[in-house]
Length: 440
View 1 (cartoon, rainbow, N blue to C red):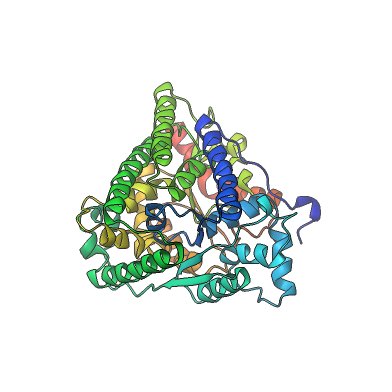
View 2 (cartoon, helix red, strand yellow; view 1 turned 90 degrees about the vertical axis):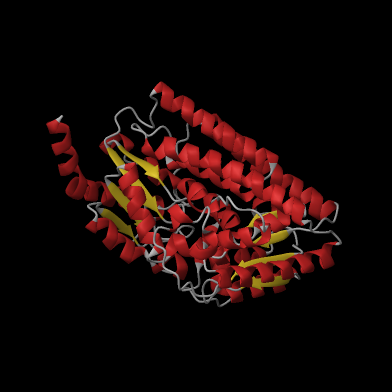
């Protein structure tokens, strides 16, 4: 049983100036969103992370990503309030907590307690149907907001190119299957028609191409930062700095601010590498974090730096920029974009694509251990975790497996999990580290 005094997350430790700049920019964006949508009546959309944000950016329609909104709610320690709302409304406790937290905030309908007063009414909500619950969540959310829901199909992926992360910049048509790309591209054109009809704005293929070119520049800068961060000893910045400097620009990808912020991030990381600055003075253990962020307790990432010299050097967010986003062939920008979107969730969460990439990254980053977050209510996120654990263990990487949730901390104890992880390091990792240190 978790005691009340043990509940609640801890703040993470951050060292970069650009981290503060990123969060300041996002705060200003939300303020401008309220002004543009509520006061001026501009269109707006709520979308899943694995949907074509670029279509909205090309039409100057602001978006809020469901996953970012859920992570922000969780970071503000508001998840328990909103899960109580779902419980009282009769929703099953097995429903995905991550994807339904935004719906719960809307159903609560209390601007005084919601972050920034809650989200304004969107023109449309968009989601790929990657699991059984997402269609119902977004249908109910659209009904509650008085908005339209536009679903995108997620057909099976028969082609098993396990080295997708090496082959998809130029060979994306064959890697992701032309039939799947064509289907999504056609559905994206349908979304454009809906947006044009609802907003009176006109979509321009040329503007999308320019946006995709700037995104290539942004993702290349982030890929360079990833090489510096994850391949360097000592690791210059941990994932508490990596996540906001990657994901906030990604929600605005292709925007001039996002491109320049990626450059600032790369340059600040590079200067730390050149100065030999690390997350901590005595880095001994390098750790991968596999799964979405632990948004309700980001301080977990820093908890064992002093005791074990343990640094979280890797999470999916930063390396994914170079592995998945860049497209070298943009003669048909709509299909190139569809190829980026049509398997975004799959490569992060389903075997054989997930485990092959994780094992490859573990070797490249010289990690000593991995932590896998396996949220039991999130079907997509939990699907490939056990196979990935087995693959990493077979490759010689000990794995600490957490059946916890990224936004629901009701069964989480910071102190207990830190002690459990410390015991794992003592048993599975420290003997190898001590032998390595003795051999020097």
